[in-house]
Image 1 (cartoon, rainbow, N blue to C red):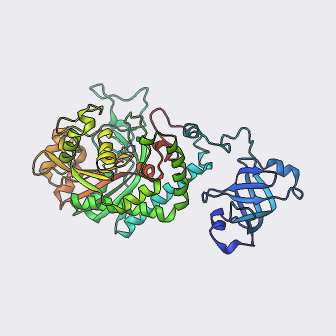
Image 2: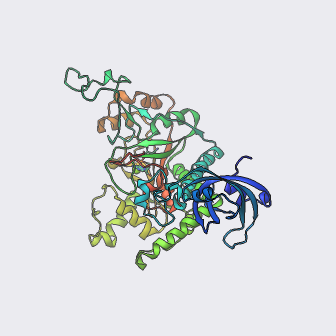
Image 3: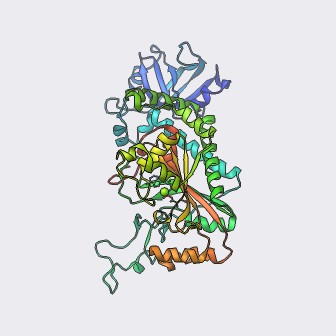
Length: 478
Ligand code: 4AD
Ligand code: MG
């Protein structure tokens, strides 16, 4: 008899009064009688009732928290009120024993810090298995959205010779002997002797390559890992994170904003339709957590209300200049409560400013567009005013920036000028220039930080808790 999933048993009538075989891990074993078994297929455990008299004492002793079991028995309507069905155990096989005293995941509340140190076992808890099931379904919803809307999935390279964001925050990929690298006549490392014959790095974004595909296949997207060597140890930054980057030919900045809003609403609605048990569990966890906070710091909406709010309301759209005026004149700025005071047009918005706009001023997702050219990347389309670019950032409550995108500079002469100005070697981007030489056209796209979306969807407040094995400065365990 092949094992079936607990999810299947709990959500279908067809197993009632039938014999089944299930495998999973023991969450608890009570009164030498009730095993709460979980196999990760859903939030719920299934209760398996063993007959103390009929069961081998050696086996009973091995039914400990964390042990892996195979159970054969009959599904019956439950006698208790906690669950609808339970399994009367005929046979219990110990697949893998667990020394309950040494097992890190005890049936009690653990701190997230502790569970991060035990990331290989943390999905044995309700919170982390719920988060990771949501992560999995969200990524499916993302592919589904693009598929339904005529996009092709492009696998852009992970190893690259270009710095898409021009921020110089890349991890080098090299096979040179670091103790004794080959040097050129100027005494510098000679990368022509390196594996690829040039200096290469892990990609910070698949955008530039996605642009090449948009300029031939029309509507494309990438969804893959990206890497940033920025030394920011915050609850919103990872050194390795996943990014979704659609890129569309013949689409301008307005189309880009509409696409991003429609896309975000679709994937969040998908979760409400498909993961309600996990969402409800995470919501109740948050409600308990919120109760510890002072009244004025508590969230006005529950998790599911927040998701519904985003799917049912229009995003607020404002220009950088409008955002700047609001921030310059707002109370915390005037009272010098911000760490970075806003007084000069052209200064970059920090996360404290973004959060003020989203959480205090508008209380909904906000799209800011037409940013000063100076604070944005080289590839963005310059506006007629000569000082702003068609960039757009989307800010979410509790998260800050979740999406960054733009209409791209499609004019060769403007792009050449910009590249020179910021000091990029034109020769390295020859192929990117070609796209402007042969059938150039307006095109746009954006990047959504996948983990920031998972944070929003689950209410988790640290980005390290929404990716299976986080990579951050000074940490690459597992
Ligand atoms: O704003 P960013 O840097 O934009 C780009 O990389 C563009 N090339 C995207 C495009 O237009 N195709 O990054 C996009 C998003 C951010 O809005 C944020 O959500 C996320 O990626 N992000 C990070 N997430 C986790 N850890 C980090 N260190 C992140 N840096 C950016
Ligand atoms: Mg950005």
